[in-house]
Image (cartoon, rainbow, N blue to C red; front, side, top):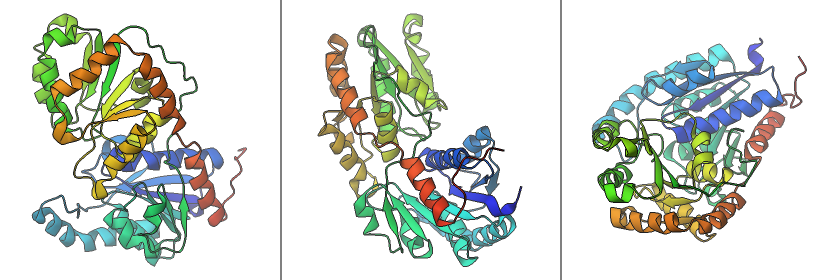
Length: 374
């Protein structure tokens, strides 16, 4: 295969960066089966576990985090590694000669996009938040175009062109039938993003100790994340066998759509990726926004769904077992309100965002957008 049709995805760190990039890759192959897609990330990010499962080549560079919410020591280490990461990125871009580089966020995105720009390779960024991340703000002047979910994001990006789009999702996130079965137990799906949420996990640990409440008409699937899995597991294993059959805990879940289809209600953070997936699968939610999210964007995301009567918002400082039980008990007794919340959640969904972004890039670089017949 000719290197002239290589696309390079710079994405990593968390699922919020990786899965949109996978959506781009999937759509690219749908539109032209003659393209070759490569990913670049770091060994410490989730990409090293997730990308190989999709059988895309993954190239690793050595770089850390520069965010304000990491230690000064880690930021200093990252600054020391930057020249080496940039050199690795230059070698990779020169070797692959991609027709386009798409930066979707994560540790590796910055050096790769800068290397692509300096080598004259068309580069693009995608930004999901109203206030762009640091890497995208710095890199915006070097890319051909930025794709944003919120109009406000474009005001912070000094780039030539900005296109407003929805949130890119893989085709597997589609609820073709909005007819959920609301009979039987209340099905609660708990997760805190790919890394998990300690605040949510701690309240669930308290819930697992409340045997009387667990004996009500309730089933739980709980993704804990790596850091808290063993702590939650200790409490879970002390439950009676009949309750362990009703509650399932996982460190990480690969097949999120399966459990979205299963769930009546989700308990989770309100990052834009989570909101987009829930809306595509018509799952209402109890949102516990991450209080340290940049520009308070998770609260804003949650507010937009609360206004549509599709979700409940509880600030992390107010989140406790008593409040959680009050909400769950209401739905255990009567799940009829969840049907309306589910419909309202689905109405928020913006379809075809992935295709819109990919088509724009392909037209920009003059690559055939027709399906290959070969």
